[in-house]
Length: 108
Image (cartoon, rainbow, N blue to C red; front, side):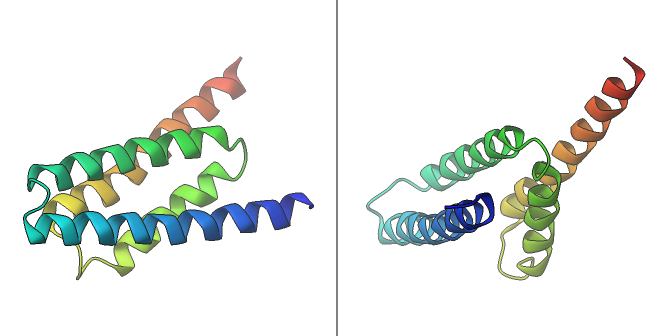
């Protein structure tokens, strides 16, 4: 399997699993099975997992981050305020850090 096929398979798997996990957690929280604060913890864990994923990509991390930001902007009507803060602020912070590290590497 070449790199493009592997990357595409990983992206599709991530999207499907993310959708399933998010839907399950939200449904269980609405049902009362999970405490409501669990959604916030799940969101925070998801943001941390996304940042770790982005940092594992040397070149495509920037495109991944831009895609994450655009996806959040497309879903802005369906996201809560807390979700908007995490999903808009997170990618912007990652992009700023990436640019800072890139500038540092050029100076060295």
